[in-house]
Image (cartoon, rainbow, N blue to C red; front, side, top):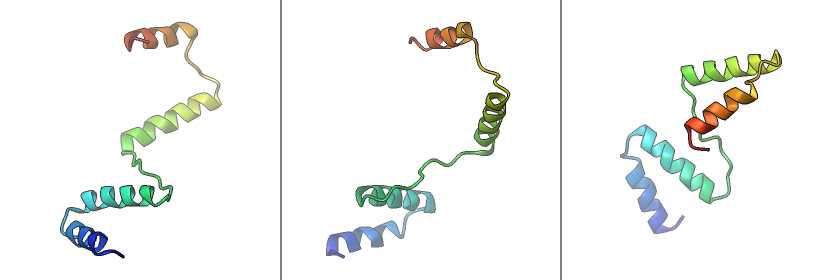
Length: 75
């Protein structure tokens, strides 16, 4: 390990855990390691579970509903 990297790691040790995790993800990404960086909260997990169950039942938005959402977001 270079002196600069060693200094950076030592400095990071004194930062809050969430900041340390952010730094670790960046370093791993630069080193070519693919890691999951998205952490979902309970509401997001529930929303995805609901969407998956709707898809299993083939309950999809109509073309009109999709166009309305696109229009709402300027697409």
